[in-house]
Amino acid sequence: MSTTGGARSPSFRAGAPAANTRAALGPLQELPGTWIGSGFNLIARPDHQDGKPFFLELNATREILSFTEISAPIPNRGSVQDDIVFLGVHYLQQISDAVTKGALHLEPGIWLRIPPTTDPAAPETAVRLATIPHGDALLAQGQAFTVPGGPTIAPVSSTPIDHATGQLVTGATYLAPFTTTPLPPGIPAGSVADPNTVLRADIAGQTITETVVIEVDTTTAFGGSAGGLENIPFVVANADATSMRAIFWIETVQHGDGHGAYLQLQYSQRVILNFLGIDWPHVSVATLIKN
Image (cartoon, rainbow, N blue to C red):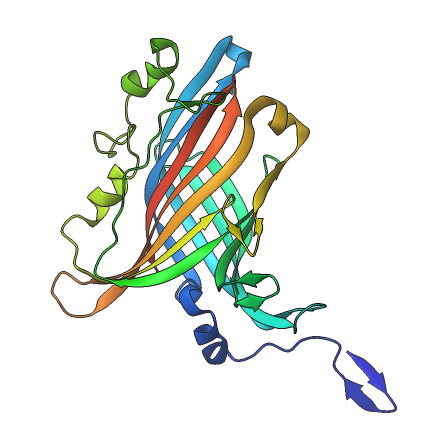
């Protein structure tokens, strides 16, 4: 705070009351708060240290995902069109192994609701910014929409792909672990081939009245420009993270007795890791309840 001639002149952007900002978050407006639940993590990771090409790690997970509103409007100054102003939320994602309780993932980041623009010509988008302690940073963008009823959760493949040809990898050397590695306790059969099996099992029998769908991708271009991933040199050389696609479903679920409802967040995220000339899908899914 600065003062001039006895008058107090604010040098900060004052935040608006929460009730005023929440609606302006649009499809992000139900995110603020703490979401807790469980999920499944599948990752093929390099294993040079043990003299093996890779190790398939499967984890049942516990997760806490917290969102906090950015209370002040964010101005982006225009030189070829008028300024735009928007809002967003911070988040902190913490994931641990449900069996060993060991830490698996920590991710601070931001979600933004970007309004339509004329230069570049682009529709309204949802943008996710994140940094990961392994030495990765991402910008993913996409769009959101609302549908009546529950989500349509399509299969997601974990099968590795030959980077040069784009064809699915064949042969026991790389595929055997995908059929012989035991599933963690509580994870349904079929979840290695299609990790989204976990999500569909979680909502079987639920009555979901409405779903907000938010899809973001590092490779989809809006206004002529896509997002992307940046990695430290060690990651690039040893297990290069090249792309990320995620779908979030914010679901309104009726209580079993038919009286009232609660909010549930499901997501499916697929990161491609490149090593040994192969693109390995790293898939994470979870079902979380808003506390």
